[in-house]
Image (cartoon, rainbow, N blue to C red; front, side):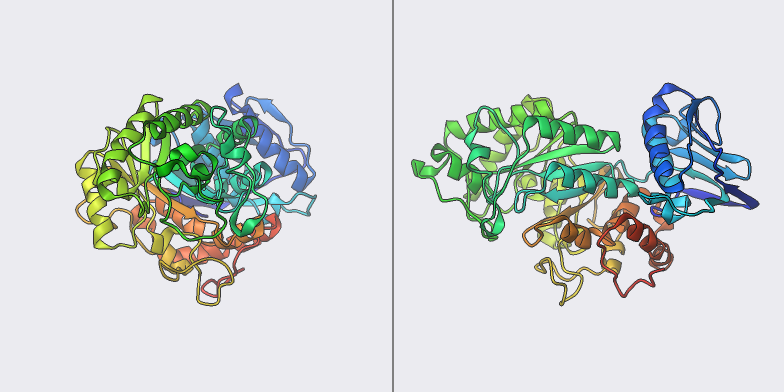
Length: 484
């Protein structure tokens, strides 16, 4: 399984077999949506009726127990008599059912009826996460991905207990979320993408549907509005946001660091006030990401003045600030989450340390290990390599607790795997760069430090291959892994 559970014990001579007359029992109505979705999938692959009923069943889901394991923890038991998954919350129950799906044969994920048997080796599991933040970022600005495509991405990443989806919604190449008070952001700023093709954006209705779909998979959306650089789409849409009131052309290339808001204009902050308000109103999660990276065209003194003002506007609208590690050079409000993307370089580590000294916490996304858009090897047909080549082993073999020196464990919120899409213009390419590396980042975020071992992980990862084949995932068959 991936992630490796906290504790697991085999039950010798106890094999559970799902039979045609099986039922799924729920202890209370809160488990109904989870049971219904689980049953629907198994009906497709097994052909069994699998009615969901109150009380006990062949498989029983309960939110009456496992309180000591926290909100995402759960207990699971599979033996000859049946399967039980118990948690204190529906979120924990969902994580337990995710594990149960991995215990079943890979063909249980199929969308057409398959032949059995449907067996699970007897086992008991007690499980809870190491870190509370286990994220993946999808850049929908360089290349736009539709609502249905993002939903499919959510389906796949939720299999590995990911609980945050960071959406990079604005950049030089495109603005992707509707803002009623500044409509040209999407009408004009969202019209193109890298390469000059047709762009797109999420209407408020579509974004609400995306947020709800993520929530059904117990994933919280973290929206990012990148500031004060990476802003050409906004600058092209509204001339008054520029120094000199002259709008640039729309941009469809991939260079970075050339754009900047006019830091000394009141209209810049009026704009951000409106944008942050509307994005916050649409987003139930507690974090709003204001970017802050690669602002090379913003004079540093102006950058240091800008960050606290932008952060104040995020807080004004009821959200906690999240930003890339450069924002730590300025003053940060209480509760800030700083996202470290350095390649373990001293300058970036100093900024991460400075963030913690201000009371911020860290989400770790080292580019030379966690960036999913880095090439696997020199001949990889997609991706970039400015942070180096990132093999499956390189991506897995690091410890979040020790990545940044002199930072206490309490300051680490978790990990995130960003996927930038300069070279990725369809979902198959996204899958190719995401799998098989994302499950490793997910394990670093969930599993206990003592469980992290490349040799054993490599064997468990090999077992995921048949599951991805059934799901139709276009994964990279890395020669590092002896795929099953």
